[in-house]
Image (tube, rainbow, N blue to C red; front, top):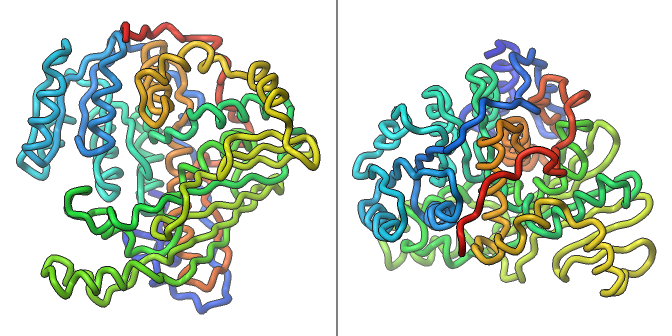
Length: 463
């Protein structure tokens, strides 16, 4: 790794897990990220075709279980291996596959059993659905073993790990995709296609959010292994940026025509998490480890400016009692669009278009992937069908040797907002430069192809 870049990461406190040890006084701007040469450009990279994709799954919790249930509806896919540290989860997975043609090898019981899975020679793709702190180590090891990687969000929790993922993907020439399913939701795909067709004019400003009340589940031992997400919430920033960010980053052609420049981030106080932990610690010894600890503020707001002068606003709140909102807003010189708190709406002036006018636009700008797979995806399910659209597209790209819609630069950049926002919050909302993980190739990289001009050959089994 570039020595200057390592020095930068150490100085800013972004190396490893230390995010508040930067030797800057409040008010002083951080050093800019050191530039790095790109070893190989993975944007637009086409790996050799894989007619039948052999998959190994790591982590059979909430997300992993859903992934197994969806993938059996695709032809030319083999579930080769499944791993989870909990034997009971393995048994559930075994039973769920009994009525299918898949007979994977199961791994469990040891903390490093996943490594044995990654080392197998008969696997093409490692699909990771584990706690956040394991994402980067598993993705890195899998690529070193010659496997493509699809990993749940965020793919890393430190900027250092983001760089490692980029460098490893470039060196091994293995895809490293983050499974940002919201890029495949129907309104988000619609607005992306509209933006590509110039409907919004010049994009000026976009907004995204993840506002989801999961407060009680953070303390529920039956919900997540070892309460890993409560542990993550001891960090203070936008810890889960990619649901809101992914779709709007694609609208802006981030990494493919524009790039993030710098950000500032601000968090409210924590009004709930520490209080709940202290309360539980009175009657449950397990929670004594959290007594007196600091937690993430209820609401975080992060704003980003791009190289071309567009602005991005992101929000994150998973503890306040608010209705769910995954805000998706696009504001251009000709029109705007917004979903949440209301259903998707389009405007070309001061008011939203009528339902009939909206339906006419929806029909006119419906993306090809929705035309071909949308209704079947809704039948399979997974957050209304977007999870299945994501899986179908991933497998179809691998089978046809096509570039992935989300590459390692997207995974690294979108995930890096977490630790970068932590730095800004810890430094009185000072601005911090956002690293260019593409090494400057964003200026010439081509936008994500949503035309399905190639591929589209992966069959869906009868439902």
